[in-house]
Image (tube, rainbow, N blue to C red; front, side, top):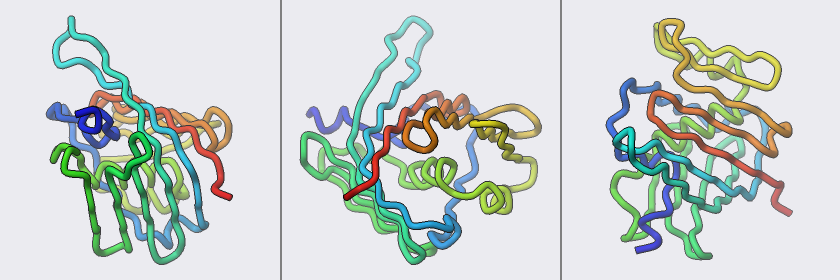
Length: 178
């Protein structure tokens, strides 16, 4: 049961007020190889105004090269989620206890928003959406309204995503794999 409680930001079960674009960039669009161990901390807004805010953690291993993006999600040392994306096909393996609400497209989108170069992201946006970067912050807007903000607190080693549209915050602490 504990495994079911450890979810990525992509595990939001609330219907989002505004759907964000998927941004499924080809791995080559990232422009660099990544090999990171990460600790994700998701803070979800409650269903009702008086409800409690929930916070969950998940460890991940992220690898990106020109041909493939791979993510392994680990809870208590056990693999609960594996994503493999080659730019065309997404292969997903999940632990039976992991809810069907886990949305791999949201996982890929958040990875891209944090790690992909700004021009590649801007080129992938649908009409009506913009992404700008100022100082250590990226802001995704729909018709001028901020929907999601990425804040780089320590380069890419500590990052926070404030997703107003889908009502969650995600803190990512990364370190290079050795």
